[in-house]
Image 1 (cartoon, rainbow, N blue to C red):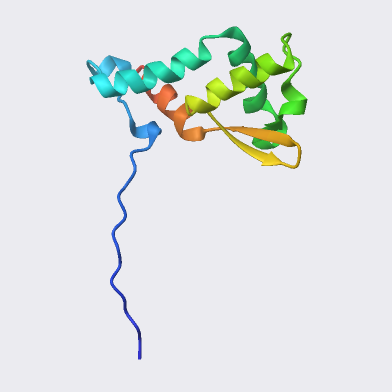
Image 2 (cartoon, rainbow, N blue to C red):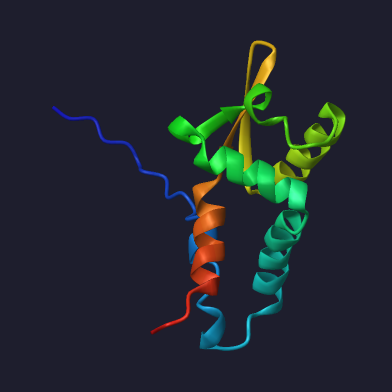
Length: 120
């Protein structure tokens, strides 16, 4: 005898990787252009770009703030920039004890990459 219960359909979330066709495919819809502009804007600061690069290239795919904070600015400024990257959806974070570990959000990076892909 098997018990069967109704299966609820969950909405499919649109992945940032599927956000936008390549930039050469046509004009971007307003919503997509605003979403992508927010990601690029977050990376437009040199300190944020260095922090993002350090996290993305760190062994294991994640980095403790203690390992990446030496980018030439004070610790509160590093925290501010990491917050901006997190708010834009480029990073995720997890607190472990007194340290916060950061990881690049793969879907955001894939979406940016897809947008900038130019067919050969």
